[in-house]
Image 1 (cartoon, helix red, strand yellow):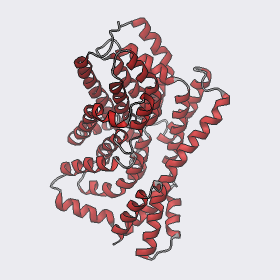
Image 2 (cartoon, one colour):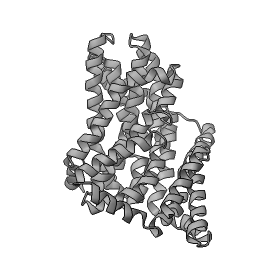
Image 3 (cartoon, rainbow, N blue to C red):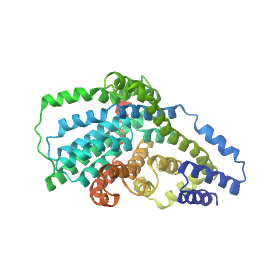
Image 4 (spheres, rainbow, N blue to C red):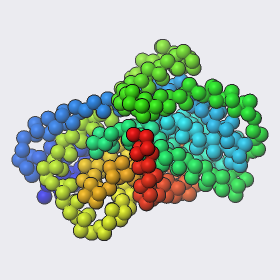
Length: 425
């Protein structure tokens, strides 16, 4: 009864277009009153205690660092470096787009910021160079989710908090899948560019490549500092986020000279708004998750999956299917706070490594960035290019297939996720 009431009310509130954090809180409180008879104050207490985590401080700090870098003009420098590096290959600007997303994702950790920063530069540039605008937009939209896999990733920080997994290990686990999907997307872009004769020829220029590298190097050093500090044990993920903010401010103010001191208050305000939304969602999840635990919903689901699922691989494929469905209606962050408390205990019963399960779940959920009706990257890319979402579905489908293939490969081959953390940490 409690399960039906909890998720039924949550679904009703979503259909009423009540924001997700408040849908979580209201459904939890009403279930508590109607089914368990316990005082509502308990839910409020759980919301407060759920925020008592040092690792959660990394979220607003990484968001702030990403906002500062985004305003510094680093995106343009990364695009130029990527173009000098791979622009001479068939479909060069498409490869530059994907490579720039990999670089930018390792700095901002945000897929939507990637789409806005890279797309505003490369969608018009690709269109002028003979690429179809639909193809340019599809490449931009589908390469942006790489930022959720390559560290630092806010999505991985949230999963680590929910599942009790060390964030530094998650960051390392995301490196190989993030790079792999980038090269897979570049392979597809090469094939499609060859087929449609996209792209103009550009000679390789070592001198210009070196200049563009030096120009982009201050931004490229940021993920090296973050990961290097965590690998060496100098600082934790949260401390790494604080270092990232200081370093971002330094290179923005003294090297790139953008944003100016007068622009910083606006950057801080936007960071507070973004952080507030994420933190509010996490707080509301505390009460919702506590009600799931007292109603023994994870236990019942574990028994259900164990009864119908023959092995852990079949379970992971079920996780991918569930994530694809949920990702159509919820952002990856919202979907994580809903699915991890439910599915993580089941994964433990199947003996799935928490790092492996996390990367399967995250790699499938981030596909929601490119699928309607909620896909943020899809709508941002559409607004930049001026192409209606309905006309983007067909050109996106081959790239969608690559993103889905990555999730399948991560599920089939745990070594893609587990080898690097075992070697480095």
